Amino acid sequence: MAVSQLGLNRIRLELYGCVENPVDVHGQFLNGQISYEEFKTVGSQKINDNNDPNIANPRGFHFTFIDYQIDNMILPMKRKLKANGESIRVNLCLVDFNNGKDGKVSNMSLGENPAEYAELVLETFEHMRNKYGFAPDALEIVNEPNNCTDWRTRTGAKVGTCMIAAVKRLTENGFTLKEVVGPSSAEADRAIADFDQMIQVPGVSDLLTTFSYHKYSGTGTAANRQAILTRAQTHNLKTAMTEHWHDDHAKLMDDLQEAHITYYQRWAYAAPHKSTYIRTDVTDPANPVFTLHDQVRAMPQVFKYVRDKAVQIEVTSGDAAAYINQDGRYAVIIQNATQGPHEVIGLPAGVYGITSSGRATGGYLIETSSPDVTIKAGETLTFRVATTGGLITVFTKSTPGAR
Ligand SMILES: [Ca+2]
Ligand SMILES: [Ca+2]
Image (cartoon, rainbow, N blue to C red; front, side, top):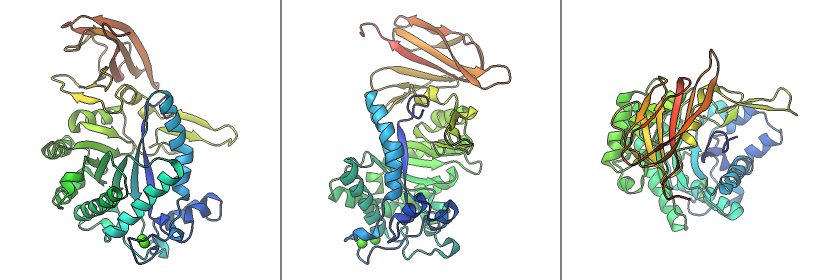
């Protein structure tokens, strides 16, 4: 479902602080020795492997949960994408909440110790390379640092210093990152403030590729997105919205149109929780039921047609975002407010498919196709759609001379 129905091609691989702990906390949870509630209290309990961040004690690290995520989510997605001639992007991101909760106190802070942060990241990359033959494509420094005890103050400076330390050690050990991502603060306005501090850390502007933000507490405003885009353009960065519950396709479009995001994550992939993409019903464990949440039903009209390395192109009018994919195929995404006629101007000659989603009376978003439209060079593409309320995607089916 992740690849074929939703069109996902990127995944956040969560690195819990308790990976660095002589006790295999995730192993205990997975084999039922501790409950999920207990696991949550120790998930960020970091116990330093030894007193030297440059020498790792192998018994001080346990990658059980990393392996679980790779075996059960990343490898199946990777195989499926490979069959389509594509590849997955894996984003490693430290999750460092709840330090000290219920007396499970850590004996080190990663936010305060860039060298220790770098050691944990390097050990994780090396574990993946040795066991699976690949390493993460991207390093997202830490999830919502302003919500983490160890990162809450001087957040931007800490994220920046840890970034410098980790990338240096990864590079020294033969790893090349496609992306370095931060600050991923929980609110968009806080992300702007943290970014402004982070970018002052010497070296950060050379390493950072992507300005990431979340938009909790009502901070997903046009003004904040504009401020993020302006900073990204000033520093030649990409942008990404890396987590927000409850988003629907219209909220995704806001991020695409106003912040020019290059990737997006709603929240988790699948759970009984309404902020995932897929609702799981495991009432009958032998016959689990998986359904797309209504709010995400139009999102594949972006995800499936705007693929990795697509470039956003200027849209001069209308509620839309437009892209050229790496293979030359165009995709124009339009907020579907009326049945039309809709006009798209400026597309090259070719045959275009049109898919639109809208609400049947009182129901879920349903995706339907309009007839293909063929245009010559310079012609306007005109079409109507059957229903409204979702998105319209106009996409290249074939171009003259293509086989
Ligand atoms: Ca250590
Ligand atoms: Ca060490």
